[in-house]
View (cartoon, one colour):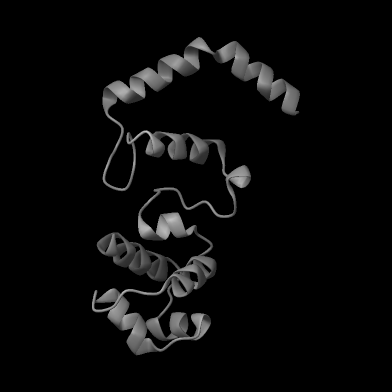
Length: 127
């Protein structure tokens, strides 16, 4: 889990072109502390993880590697794709170290194809 956290923290900082010092200032800690997180010398407390997630507008689950989707907020606000990913993760079929196999993707595609009318009816009702 720590390796995933470090990797994602570095990626998020690079995407925002943010320095360790800037992140430290935003979450109320020091540059040295951020450096220790990145070097794996120290693990952040949950309060710090929550602040980091807020700064980058990602979920704690994403930051810690429990999800590959960067969604935020509660489950009712997740995108449909995130809900599916969450359910697959619950079943042990998907996660930070797991990818869907070709046969699993084919099965999902068949389910969608077989239920196209139902799906289209849902779309019509929501518009």
